[in-house]
Image (cartoon, rainbow, N blue to C red):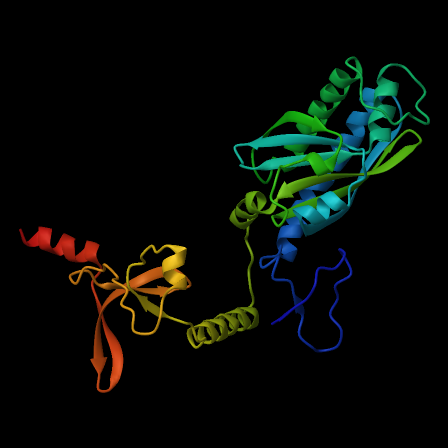
Length: 315
């Protein structure tokens, strides 16, 4: 495997027969089956949402699914315009925060049509106290269509929370969190824009995995089993630094600076307490010190908790 720098969506391709670039920031990716399942849900949502806008705004409108991508949250936020309309949504019973984004001009056009206006060019400004309830009502109706689109996958109850205008002020996810972005081409009368829905990857992946019904051929099964065996063998043979350590102690800075060869530092580690065997600061065993011939060694022993439980069992 090789690592590669982040590239814009759709720019990564495999050339020749060489290795496929691997992005360590996205170790798990959506499979084709997962993308297809989401595509069906979002296409259903897009059709019903287009019908809703046409009926509610009394102007010919359409919503068409453009793409489904897996990005990092900071990549998604940096791609959004400023200002824009971002709705923060909860999808009970699923965890995490979902974002629905559309351009400010599209939102203003929709409000203009709801108030009986002709649409057309709209001013770039925050919504007034009269306009905000109209927008919230429209977004809540659109969330009802989202529930309808996902009903074959999972039963959700979308609830609209806050509305923001600047993506940089959002703290919905950590910058490195993986998200799934569905982009839509939205048309309201003569106004066109690209809207999007941002789903947390860790929220939608378990739902998609429950829906998997993939029948593999004998050859595909052999390929997968061989890949799993090779991966297991490679991981089993990978060298790992292991440390055996005493309990740490605290020292003042000036005491550390004054240390000289021959000085004795009391460790304070009880002689009856075994040492910790660690890998990358994770304790996975306990041992007592000793030697094997002329080499220092340690003997792995039960952990203090296991030894205590055995002693209690004897009693």
